[in-house]
Length: 235
Image 1: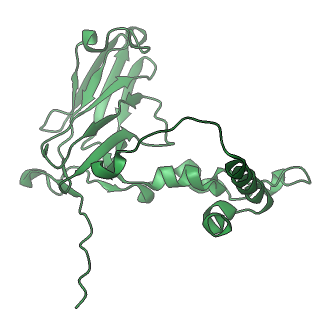
Image 2: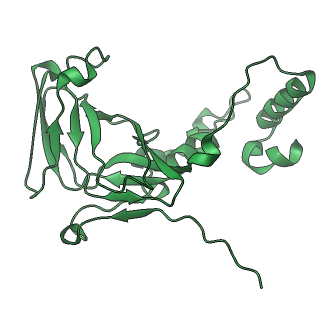
């Protein structure tokens, strides 16, 4: 009798009183930005003998980055007030739990964003992974935010199964800004720590490797979609 290996499971857990109230995590592929959805795969107006008219929608590496992992959204709507050319930041909300707090500026003294202070989005989802798995938390990929820049981090979510808050730098102009409930905050990308241990080698390529590189490049240029459809078969 054959037994199928059980797939690793990522869990997002919240307090009972928050379930059905705060915005839930969703697969990254389900929240592609509106501007991306509207872009045609081929811009026929740009099509010419010297331009194939292909847009970023046909760039698989770009799309794969956007679709990888899960999105943790903002739990509830907040108002972010930025003053003094970014030096002063205050926040407000109607929710019954803290949504944003401030870090002390000295904690990231000398960073390129100074004098803008570091702040923190409070998250009410516990992220849990199987033994040996961690999660990379990054700003939502290829979806720049005009009001804030979340800082990245790696957490061993197999042992640290508690709330993880998300430091960020306010980057918007002075004024009061509304960030709606459900706004994507971070992209969660689970990875197996054992598989992430890889040694690096820095050297000149061999003749065979140079031929392979050139073959892949030329095939990619010669046939649309070659990267995803045929790259492995052509090697």
